[in-house]
Length: 383
View 1 (spheres, helix red, strand yellow):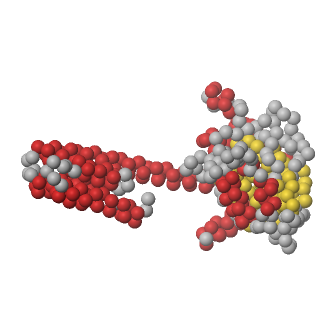
View 2: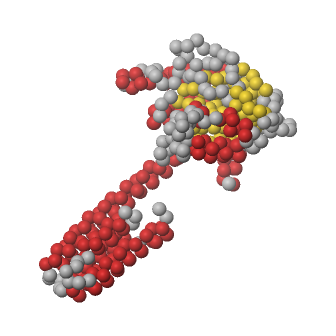
View 3: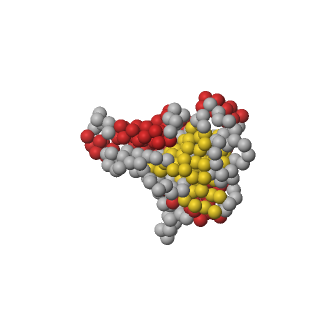
């Protein structure tokens, strides 16, 4: 809570002390309002630190002493008991305020570390890569979380751009760990594997080897045996109006062209990563037209499986068609707002979306991976 609102709230317990003191002095002898002074330090402890709480408690004790002197004396049994009780409660709530403030500092440190770790795992995508304009968004279902089991990344190659979006089965830290594993493998191999099929094969091997870790405990191995990752991997060349796609059990991307929306459904979808040992696998890429002005929307099942109060799934294709003329960033901003409104402000599952637009005009030459990272870092510094 910012400092100014806290200072404004401090007026509440002080006003309470003043009011109780004045009324208690003016009240008939049979009326005693001193016990209400306990509320002043108790209220202060809910929003202020131990020093402020202690000062308010001391002020309340002083006010009780003034009431005692004015009405009878400090040695009066009734006022003596009230003073002792007020002192004890003030000490207790001051200690409570100390513990609460210390806990808040620990939470702040943990959040800062978690935020830094999450930014390393799920790096923000640059707004422009070669001839592509890109926008991305992540809506985490877990409270206070920024990422979960959904993932996306982009990598520059000598011929174009490669993009992945995926969804790890499950939630929690294990899902984040699996997402980090796949993202690391993709970033490390995307610009080294010349063929998209070879890249997906490498990713499958990485995921499968982690799921089959023989050093994991037996009970954990049983749970990991049911884990898998759905993913869609795209290769967008710079020099041709097309994209190459391998879909591993992931929801098919949407292609927006001239106000029309259609699914990019592959004829031979591959099984999710981590399940190829159980299913016959075809990791060949399929090609789709991707012309200047087209937008491809990648998304996870948390988007299309979001329900409203009546249990109706979110009609993503319909909502995209309504806003088909927007740029990727404006389109995602509209979809995020509309999705949360449809789901009543809360998502049961993580949701991620990536919108990719091929820019009109001549394609820019491919940029080396290192140079792209330096340019992206410089852009963030300027912003």
